[in-house]
Amino acid sequence: MPLINVDAKHLDWTTAVFLSQDEVGIKEIKEGFDLHTDNQRVFGLPSRLIAKIFLFRIIFGGTAYSFAMDNDFKEVGFNADKWQEVIDRFYRKYKGICKWHETIVREATKTGTLSIPTGRSWKFEATRDKRGELKFPVTTVKNYPVQGLEADMMTIARVSLFNRIKTKDERILMISTVHDSILLDAPEELVEWCCETIASVFRDVPKNFKRLFGVEFNIPFRGEVQVGLNYKDMKTVDNLVWE
Image (cartoon, rainbow, N blue to C red):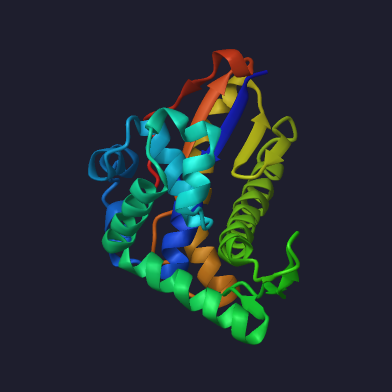
């Protein structure tokens, strides 16, 4: 039977933009903007892949020094000063992300706790590094809210999808879920129904988020569906409506 895989599209970025309510990010997501290609151009990065990795790293607190020392970025050829210019330029474009990062670090440092609209919360404290100096886990503070909200959003999608397929046909199996992906196994004659149902589930995630948590999720929640008999031969389904 065919495999049907859906990956949430730009999940890290979508959740970070929602938490920060960055106006530029919200506008770009709603318009289906190719932010990786644009970031490559705006920030002078050598490839779309590097721009993509850079975006996700900076969401989680990547520093100029860490970018300069990372083997994955050696081909870029930027030193720490140049990377700092790129980071500063990013924050000038996405002022909401910058303000949100400053706010959550300040809150976590002051109170030792941090929470998100779904009710997840974390405690943080300074620890001593190898030199015995107290360091606050800034990158962890920036990471946990995004990763936590991602898990909650995907849980909403998984539960909703499971409830729909179990009433349709017992031959449709949800066989794996990893981070931002859900994998189904279904008979050939039900593949089209599964793909359309997945898109419907993703369209409903913002509505279900508000119903569950009382907060409006004001950004589209999109995915990318692929179908094939094995992972090697998966093909993207292009005709689905995500909002």
